Length: 367
Image (tube, rainbow, N blue to C red; front, top):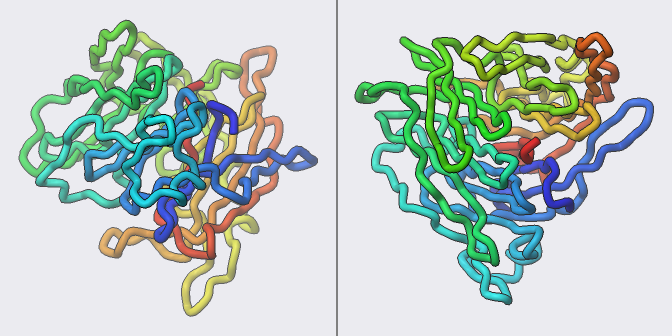
């Protein structure tokens, strides 16, 4: 596995979080598949957020105060490593920690905890820093911090970040981070609730760590977007429709301009179902939480978890019995326009042992 490349995380309800390497199959229609054996496993059954940075895969828990990591440079962690150990909090043969508690953050009022839908955002930066941000700002209780790998096997060091200038939150008020991205050394987030909205950016250069409000508007995508240097544009998924889009995010306080939205990146009618359903369940279709991976040379993959369950706010958290992958290639034309040059064929994967998964998604290094 390369030090920094996109990976896929599958949450197995019995084995924990499994991390897979990706294989791009070239041909008439480019498709993506996963190596058959995980390259790393995090044994925690709790919801984790992940980032890959500096050769390390970092997993941060939502409800608790743990940060675990699998390090592909120091060769600590890994799927086989965990199988040989009696306890997850151990050091390897050379005394290096493979699990570490960066700071205490145990909350008494985590009423929304436990769902991958509310998991923290993990944004790796080009300098190896990982910015960890809670995406649910409830009752004014949330955490923003930077994680940095200490040289010579010293683990990860966490440094708290100042809160964004969103103003005081009312008791029991729920505010969400709806979109986020890292653009060079600056982190951008959009925050929204029922009464207000706004976009803020954080300057991380030289330890400045200062927030500023960009405006009373939202970034025009949902979840994490990726800056693609070869295209000179930010690539994300449009809000609600979740189509691939390209937009310009400028550092001058103006709302981003959406350059293109590609309708052909939505699953076609004959690609939506991987089964006809069983025991009265509806067919398996893409549902919730798509994620992006940038594969280089203008190639982008969209991962859509698929399920036979219909989303329901009053029902238990949705689980997934498959995931679809769609690889597309975007090119920049001589006149500066962006063009969808190639659309691959939809491919699929199923969780191990045919079990349902609470989460399936990409982790993307800094671009």
